[in-house]
Image (tube, rainbow, N blue to C red; front, side, top):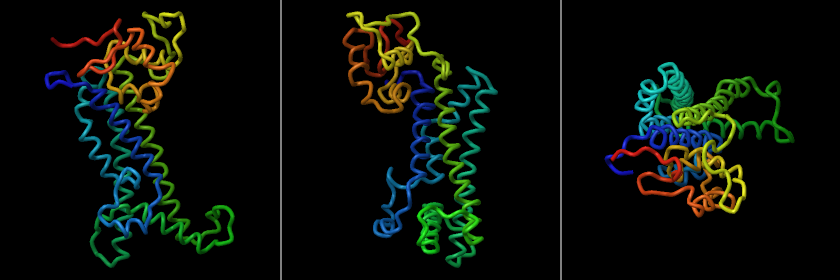
Length: 276
């Protein structure tokens, strides 16, 4: 986007932040590989490894979360913005607190009187927990009930595993909240009826728009979207879906949608308002 273009709270803030938090939540479900971590050392980190709470901090800075909240306060409502802010910060704080608790436990086990930060502290403890369960219940075909476990293992599940799973779920929830906030800014009612509204509803040969094409036209109503933002709005982040038959290509070929550098994809009949 050109340097003098107005800041877009959706494309540069709310939408990519929602995508990033969803990715973090997904990676919270990845198992810790102790052998691989020992082999790679400091290099043990990638999109395919467990996430940690600091990644949320980085995402909030990278995608200008505070600026988004201030923008929403000024143009939507203070209550709406504060509700969004409190939900995001609450789940971030819970993740940090659980990681701190895990680091304290690992530090004390290594004889340290101070709490040292340990990367993948929760996944490490979880992997060790599952190893102990396999040792204690080698004949079990199914996961043992907590009533069968030693007290310390049952307590770990309650204090760590349940909270970790809850944080993962709540992180996905706030990502959805951010996506709904972006939809509100764009004038799209979350969960509302799909429809193009005023404008074309069929291709030039009379073929009615597909559901995906209706979503695309609705998402581009009065605004330009990058490929990534459009994909997040209409196809769960998978841009390849709207390049298939029944998607974006037919809309472009018909002249209904165009792509412009610095603007993104936009509707010809309802283009975004651009500064001169």
